[in-house]
Image (cartoon, rainbow, N blue to C red; front, side, top):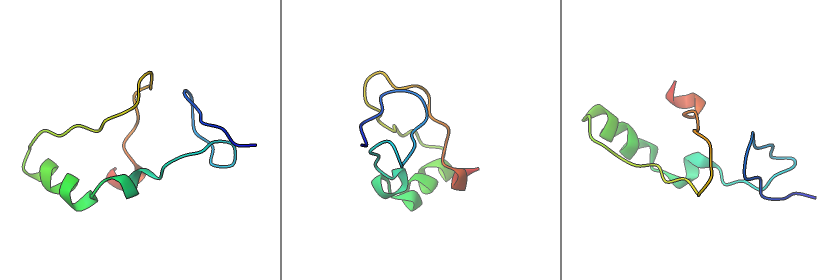
Length: 57
């Protein structure tokens, strides 16, 4: 049975998840980075820092 994970790594076979790249317009985010503008990636309460997706590295 899957459930919502509130801490630690997310495993798709065990946890419900929202694919991060479908929530953001990657072109818009990359344009903001290119223009050195600020933006916010909102996270729910009590989350740990998140590393950027592999495609941003």
